[in-house]
Length: 198
Image (cartoon, rainbow, N blue to C red; front, side, top):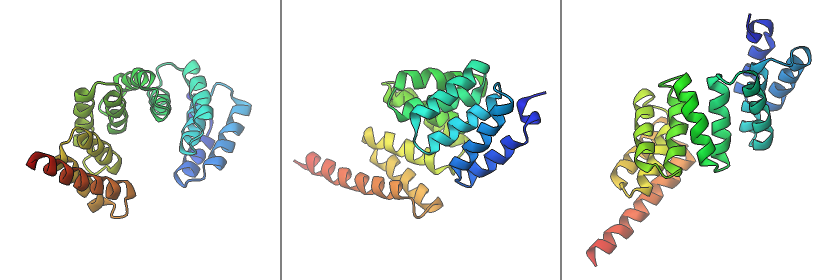
């Protein structure tokens, strides 16, 4: 019997998290831990919520605890890998995300984070390939579209970058990051054209 079966409260915490009530979700999980200190899902939920609150130290602590309980948790490996990518600790991030990917292959969100971390860890080509695969699996995900667009912008592939940011804006017209990046694409394209004409 898994901890989730024992604790219907985990589902309640997940619901609160999805409503953006992260502190409430954390409190619920802490109540679960009072009766079951080995509830991996409670630590994962706590870590995920602290991640949303950008409290990376607390997220890391909770997720390391989840991995102590179960090293084969794809979710805990993914979330901790995500924490490290937020801190710019690319090597650790790649290690954990590769493990998450091997435990839960072809998950678009895991592949997105792995591609992004690999790209920033110096494996640029492989990072882009993984992001493209992630996009293939979830073609309407604004996070994937934006991350891939940023990589193509860095690679000076302005056409592909612009296409991706425009696609994000079709899905989410108010997406600020896509708007800013599309403006950056146009700016760099103009500058690049000027240099070529010289």
